[in-house]
Amino acid sequence: MMLPPARSRFPLPVAARRAVRVVHADEIRGIDDFYERFAHEPLVVRGIWPPGHPARELSLADVQAGLGSRPLDVWDTRRQDYLAVPLGAFFEAFARGSPADGSGWNIVDHHIVDTPLAPFAAPPPFLRRNWFVGAPVSWDGMERSVVLTPAGRFSPLHLDSYGMQGWMALVAGRKTWEFLSPAETRAAWLGEERRFFDARTDDPARVPGLATATAYTATLEAGELLFFPGGWAHQVDTDEASHGFGGSLLNEHQVEAHVRGWLWEREQGVAGDLDLRAALERMPAERVHTPGGRANLTAALRACAEWEARAGGAG
Image (cartoon, rainbow, N blue to C red; front, side):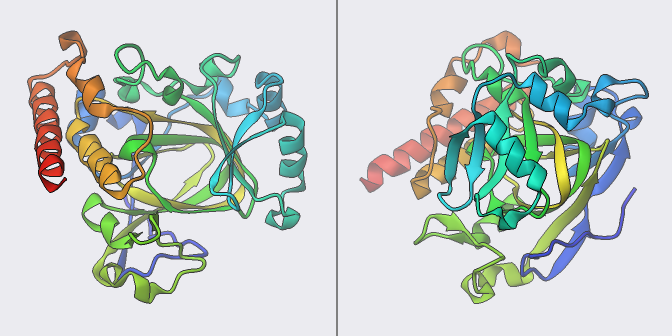
């Protein structure tokens, strides 16, 4: 199913827009089927929570109670960094609901694997092959987070950590997304500033490569899940105050795309703390489930070795 292309308040300066594909969860027959038929582009999945599922009725007060008393990890748009914000202070600002409050607090993306909210945020079955969980990576917190965004907030174009796959399921609210494929993402990178083009403030003349690009767009409603593959840059416009859950994935199906995104980040000097190559070299054989997955892992490690050889020669 295809819907008309959605449009952000701050659209990317592209030549065309293409609506993200929409499917029902019943159409997906397991993990391998998902990656074979659906996961090559962003995707909206409906019907992820059947009638009676507790996540459908999870109120904002329930979320606040389930988070306990620890500070929240909040992205601050003014500092371009995460802040630890007292729980009560954030929810007071969230209730005011206006970006004019001056806080700069844009979005909560807070890991919840060790909180009472974790069972509500379990990834759907087709997203449960995740190398972040358990050894050798052992970044279990990446699997599921609570996501809270006041109305009117805007997250400019970015890649998730290490260019990983990601998903978000909304309990309430509405968000509009615009995506660029990996082939067109670099056209939006402002290398001298080590950041992506910001559609709110930057002159489109700075990114002439986007003049022939296509943006994939979707408006995500309550009860729906959005998935995006590794290496897809995206910007998000929050139309209504929203809360829900999300997570990041690393697995055999798109590991080469993950690695290429990570190597590109290293070239730009913005790579994070994870040594992805070292983690993949230690990946136990039993965590790779398909012959194609083993080939993908081999290709990813080869790409790392070739990049290291080039980088060493350049030095």
